[in-house]
Image 1 (spheres, one colour):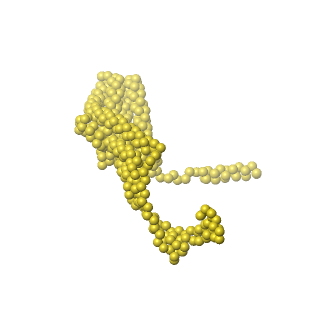
Image 2: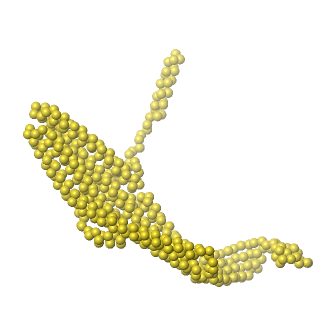
Image 3: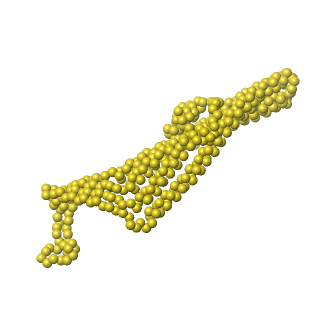
Length: 445
């Protein structure tokens, strides 16, 4: 009896545990995000962390300019205080006076008033203010550089995803064709016209195409994951491509003219030029450290032993300060600024050479990719004709399906060449836009 009760208890406990651990209703899957290329670029410019940080850098430079400007403006402050004094006469006058007490106080002093100071003549403050304005220009150029690079990354990833999607479509088409050819070989063998080796050969080709389809789908998913990362979207939300890879004619451009245009539009070069201007001002600021500085200070207060007995008290001070010996600080600051200018000049020359190389390379790649697209399209047409003729010959019994399999392989290579050529052309257009500083204007507007 006890054994039966124990078994029943274990069964009830197992049922309760299964109910407790049974999975509840799953949350609904998030809707897919269908994006065109322009939508993807706009989303990246809106919420990419690097773009946001660059924008915050511009705001920080604006505040630094306001701080530098405040040093040029008069400063005023108010003060209200009440203090208690108790003085030792001996320490105050240097000796003890007979007949007088040892100390004075305690007594209260009430004071209320305003203070004022202004830099009347200080060129270093003016130089620092101008330097802060060039700092804003450099920060804005850096922001544009970050936006351009972000657009390039998104466009490249989107084009790569389009390429992967085209590979999937081509693989699906080849699987359908391989299945049809396998069915054709099986029917011919069933009717006594074909041979077993033809059917086996067609089946091998079918399995190869199915394997390629699996690889292509995996590559597409991986590419879309990378795009979601660049767009900083929910990783659980799937992305769909609204645009398909297409050919868009680009007019030919003269490399020399394109290079000159790139010099005027590349934000990296503008940022470097702003940094050179700022370094030049730093050099002038160091030189101005040797000049005298004129400062005006003023103090006006109501002062008394009590608020009712307070009387006006004021003090005006004009001071002229000039360095006599700074221990080599000013000379070291000038040398440091000169070295910074030389470094920036060298970076500018290197950047100009790099821009010229990028432009020439992009122009050459665009021209070459344009020709590749034309040849690849013709290759696909010819390969499709070859497959059709091979199928007709095999159906008529003139040849075995070795010709069909060879034609399938040729069509597969032609499709891959067409997809690769179109991808290289669109990527070359993006590289040319980046080389000339026109990524955002071309893909985001």
